[in-house]
Image (cartoon, rainbow, N blue to C red; front, side):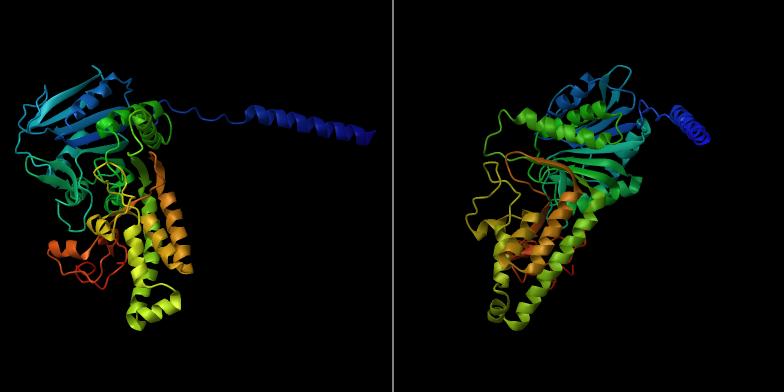
Length: 441
């Protein structure tokens, strides 16, 4: 009997303690209404894209909350006339006014304003942070882009084109402006063509957490800007609101353009996590180092001995480079898959890095390269936060390839080989680093 009473008493204690613990368990903290404040900056130079004003005005039609601010600057095209532009290439600034729910424009500068000067971009960033301070900053660059070419000048490494002076805001000036202002953006968005190269991502990685761009071209003109703002409004209460807004923007654009895009069109957009880029670079360096060893070995033992030893020669690697996927459009607006000859490759310099390593690994069937190609593809996948393509297979990041004739035209010593890979802005090993015109500049 004593045993039974003792047992019942213990059960009672356990039940009581359990119920008390259940009652006193801490409740989860409620999600704050507005956990972060955001300022979205738009820096545009528009000639042929002057409808940006209409798209930007759409922002005022959205249901804003006080934690999302929008500021911007547009250098209008020389012949574009509107209520904001006199057709002389002048510069306007705008900001979203929460009290009136309107975009308010004001004149900032005249036609002499230079889009290519770092000081001008830096001053805009400082102004944006002053009129709209926030926890997180996002910056959009809207205009005509020129891709990334290893000649290290503003014309061929251009982000925004100003037709009035036939010049670009280049990546070097952009980075200088970020340095001058000590700016760090949550997201940097390129609404201009051929911006999703690893060269660009690497140069901007110190200044931005995420990078939005397209391998191909502007997938929906200036529509990204107001759609992103809308996506941020919808997702503002989420911890990863910026990424959700980017995902929303990409999805919305594809749905919008689904009705008129044809099978000949292939558009893409992606958001890269910049902190993962160095890991990708490391895998590419490993791959390139193996290829370098093969080049050196063939130089030492000769082509015939190389063929007997491995079953392939360096010529097979160079052919594989030429057959890698082009990320530059043909005149009909699609990826150049109908590879007519090696000559097309020599004229085209933007390639998918995953395609390159897979082509080279496949052409050689060398176990070490096959394993490294797999690791490069995995690292590229992990560096992408979100990506979507329209009627095409998956594309990761593009890199710049140039050839001997191009280098000669640029004033450098003629290259030793046809295919030069991987601009030094990334810090990678040179595929052909024996070439002084490229590796030892």
